[in-house]
Image (cartoon, helix red, strand yellow):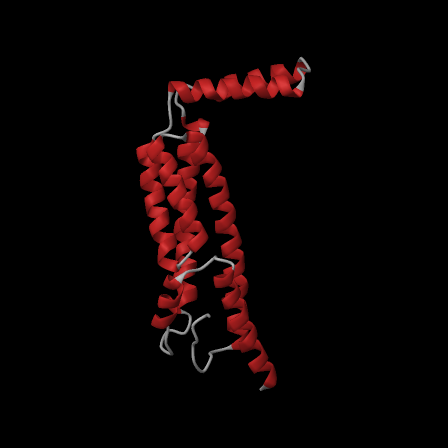
Length: 193
């Protein structure tokens, strides 16, 4: 009995830390309020569905941000160019500069589709909001602001940070749910402080 009480205290502290660290917001609490004896894993199931569905959106955003989507860009030509630079033992800085210039030229010829990126991020933000993913939602908002400003570099930078926050929250929630399963159902739910 004491071990079970200790596990429940750990679950409460783990959950509280997710709020204290700013990973979750009030929406997560609202999901918990929908959980009952008939569906004791409701929140975990919703979060699992979010991560399954959002993986598709992340892939779509990555593709929309990728140079590989430019139809005029021949992958064999790019590989040949890179191989030539390596064979000629061009200094690393010069090589990076040439590749960066080449990629910028590609972007100029076929710029990012900010409307598409914004639409995809809008979907991702909605999904993240539905589980209370506070930090992820904030990165989504910033990404959309960069889309509105036509700032591709800002979009790319923010998307990298978003993926880090997304992965961190996923890992923390997996640990939380595992601990909650070990503890079993609690007598009463309590709101974080």
